[in-house]
Length: 535
Ligand code: FAD
Image (cartoon, rainbow, N blue to C red; front, side, top):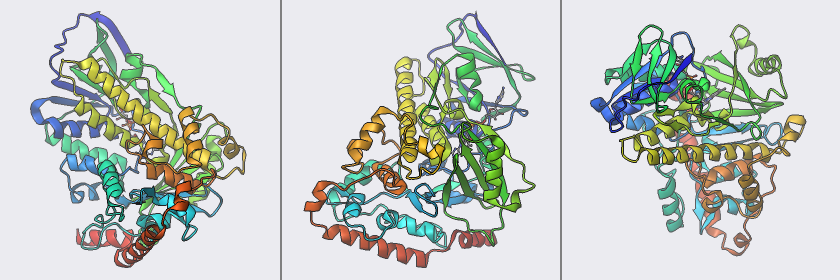
């Protein structure tokens, strides 16, 4: 691809953003197109240019709980899109072997209760009713262990009550009000290419133009704005706003506009992945309602159950394993059924563009930035970016300020997730080889180092994680700290002095509720078998 620069005199009308050109048709491209179609209808023209020869990344199947807002915004019911994308429910991330072999814990999409002003984890450290903090503090850990669906067989949903919390009304109300928007009880697993296909249909039915062609040149005007892209077979496509969804290539933002990339590699060294698509026999394999992240010698393996297959892959650091070793480990992990399945080897670019929105080009998806997929945040970043893009849509008035605010918001969220992921590795108790030993001495962001010192005396709360709580509330930090087990965390001194009866009653309420739901709810296999039988 070439860049033809600075020759043509600008013909831009800064007061109008009517023509949006999205380059790239992966998850980012089609999520952006469908969101813009839902937000603005035919008041703007949207065109997606997608290459037939350059593939999509081919992974990205697990989501974060805010994804439900995306489908709500598109006014899509689960029954409309889930079967088309072989989607399943996800209640949590299950971490295996991060502490020691055989150990597991969950990071669920469920608020942690607060009792008399202290998070339940603080009470648990003082009064551990069992050895499992996740089961004592969350209903969902039991549902995941028992492989339950969040829906009853009649399709009704168990989400009431996950947010109804504690007798400490004031604290519960403010916690819920603060986070209810971001944290709801479940997310999804789906086949990424089927979602892109579904959203292609959704978008084109709402007027989005679809051009299948390669962008071969990006033309800049004399002010450095993009005036048009040139395609191999469809000529020039002009626009007011260009959305770079070209994946790790970042053809518009990094290549054409030269925006620098800020690497996170020093703090997050996993830079490679190998993925397999494993055939699934729904009769014999459990559809766990969670993404599993199993720690390995040079990283971790993801397991994502879909209706059609299991998506799996090994995320590893190339300083510690070769692609051949990683593929061998992955195939051994999965078993003989993958012998004929081709492996997809991926080199990951870890970090973010210094600014994601420059002049009239905004990067969304891998072109904007990426941290490794440990907490399934890639699609969350896309959703967050397009929500903000609509919020800060340029109007010609104060565009520089809008862009600045947008860029601050993207930086804030990505740096926050980077910090959260670093905590997983620093916190992991295992030190059984060089890879895991190095996770204890590797540089971490200064702010995280300071927070860890505080958290050793007082478990994370909204003050001590500020300003990084967008999408990542304090309970998420609590889960990782208590689950990974390598950092010594003590309960607050004040918990010693407070009356523990309400907290113990809360542990009992969670135990009883979990037991009841495990009895009432079907497994995911039973639920989806029934759904398919009814189709
Ligand atoms: P891509 O999928 O790479 O799409 C790029 C598009 O640009 C393609 O359509 C391509 O044809 C087009 N293109 C490129 N060049 C041109 C050109 N010259 N002209 C026209 N078109 C062009 N996220 C999650 O949320 N959950 C996960 O579990 C998860 N797992 C992941 C695992 C791994 C190993 C990796 C690397 C990522 C993972 N992600 C995950 C991130 C997720 O895959 C991406 O965020 C998501 O797929 C979006 O990708 P994209 O659309 O930005 O890029």
